[in-house]
Image (cartoon, rainbow, N blue to C red):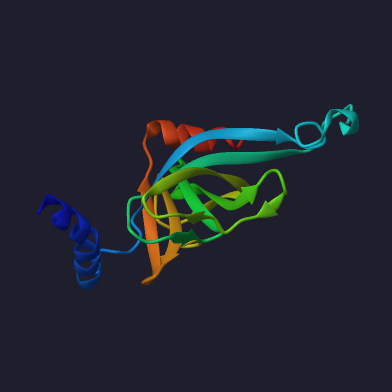
Length: 172
């Protein structure tokens, strides 16, 4: 009897999840830490390194967890907003591209169902904007997008004080 219940549980649970629309992806994200790559030094083998570093790439490591039952593909870029500045209603808007540091290419990361991993976001721009100039969520938010078997889904992360300081450190 127990063997029968165990054998039938997964097929029945999968069918019920599909009927209720609960079998899609369910993504949660976290900002992990900022980093800097010294171009010509950190990205080269020992025999090919330069003597003087003149270029840097600012990176942000992001952890993503899929608690759902379907694979998810993240959009290739995401945006984070900093705190409102004291002068007027301006705030920094940070634009990132998911990035493969080894192959130095832009990524469209995939996250399997019931799994998680860390990705690198390469800073592609950081500018002061008013809310009227750039309509993004904020302050202190990150906006991601992902696709699963049901289509497009936005993901909005609220940033804590430590996360906001992490973003600010990328300006230095």
